[in-house]
Length: 112
Image 1 (cartoon, rainbow, N blue to C red):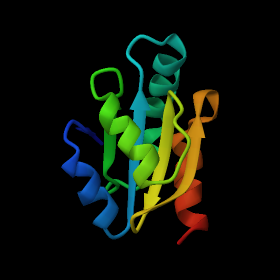
Image 2 (tube, one colour):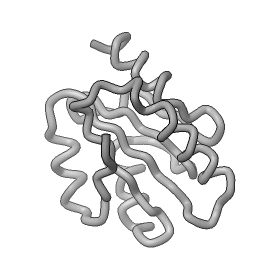
Image 3 (cartoon, rainbow, N blue to C red):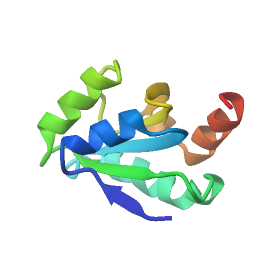
Image 4 (tube, rainbow, N blue to C red):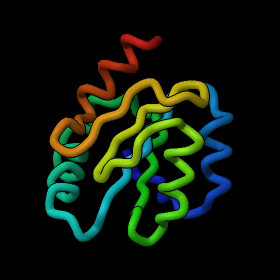
């Protein structure tokens, strides 16, 4: 599985209009907690269905996109943060040490 870099605001329109699941991982490159959450997520991400798009947002370089994510998906900003999007709606979110690819995969089963 590979990250898709989230670097353009119009990518949010694509995520919002997509059918099925997408994940957004918001990461602060200056935060050790964010780095640990990212490593844990990457270690577990084989639990995710292979076809799941996984977007990576460097929120320090793309703060305006991070702000738009909070608005578009009606979530409170956190860092680090994982959002599970289904058919354009956020159906699950986790932050800090609660971020888990295994939990996200389980939510995909629950919300199917």
